[in-house]
Image (cartoon, rainbow, N blue to C red; front, top):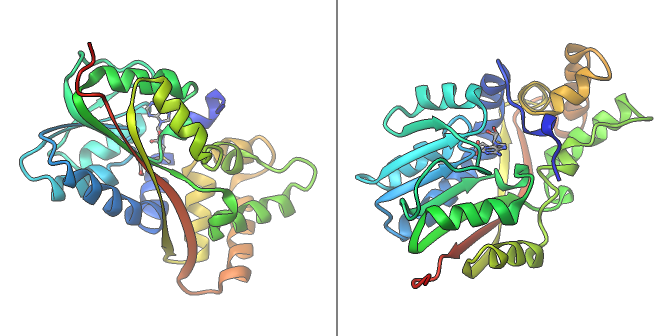
Length: 270
Ligand SMILES: C[S@@+](CC[C@H](N)C(=O)[O-])C[C@H]1O[C@@H](n2cnc3c(N)ncnc32)[C@H](O)[C@@H]1O
């Protein structure tokens, strides 16, 4: 389970995340998830762990006329997201304690957020509570680390910098929840049925190796792990150099894979 520090995006972490990681890593999956969401034709949508709003913006395009409430635990993310996608209603909210009434939404969406929830069956039960009977929960989560070329290379670069005590955030949290049976069991325990899981492989396309190093080292909770060990700027540069050795000095292209999950609240909950 993620620790407290793994859930924190503060101050300029959100802008580094938005500038260097969102276009390369998160936009392709936002387009995929938004098109899946649109197939259900929801009218009232709740987004959890919305970050800087990449899925929010994609859903705004695929769901004209729907009302979208976008939420995130971290105020620094909500500040950037609400500026980027002002047409959605934004508010700070912990997915573990949703501040909404029963049956308030007909769809809940969450892109690359559930891995951060400290108790997923409890979070899923709260999501089921705010969904209408027959409502849908759609989310994605990363496949095993080995399926993500760039993040595997970031981990290898950090292992070179810190051979005795390599940072573990990327392997432990974002890539720590990809067992399909466990995901299905967590959802079923929370009262969902009709659980479906697809594996979706897409390309990560970064502007450059140093930009991706800035995104991971400065724009994710990896930052706290680096700052506890060494100088952030020097480590970011070392990771950029290592990524350049692996991917070259121009744009970066790597494989990545995610599990895309949908589940339904039974139509009759009585
Ligand atoms: C990898 S980012 C994904 C953000 C966004 N969905 C995207 O695709 O760019 C993970 C997000 O989860 C949020 N988060 C972590 N724990 C959370 C919680 N308990 N409740 C709500 N959001 C949480 C973080 O603040 C962060 O914005």
